[in-house]
Amino acid sequence: MSNAPNDLADDFPDKRDRIHQLKTSNNHFARLYDEYDELNRTIHRIETRVEPRTEEAEEDLKRRRLQIKDEIMAMLDGAGG
Image (cartoon, rainbow, N blue to C red; front, side):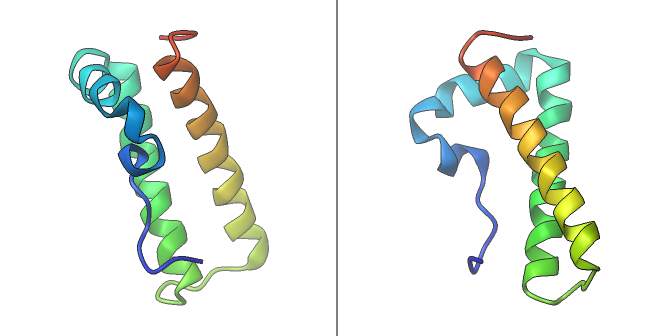
């Protein structure tokens, strides 16, 4: 658990330019990015007990976040989108 949720640009500093380009030119990527960001903030609130949820609900959110991150990574690498 960290003190602040990570941004995708923090997770992939070498992909910052590609992230920005896709956010502004690809609607699907922009939606995924926004969903990832919201899930990330929600998970952070759960982990810091600001917004408690069941362990099962927390794990479901983490699984969805990972699915989105995988799809985003594929798009950043040019395999999708």
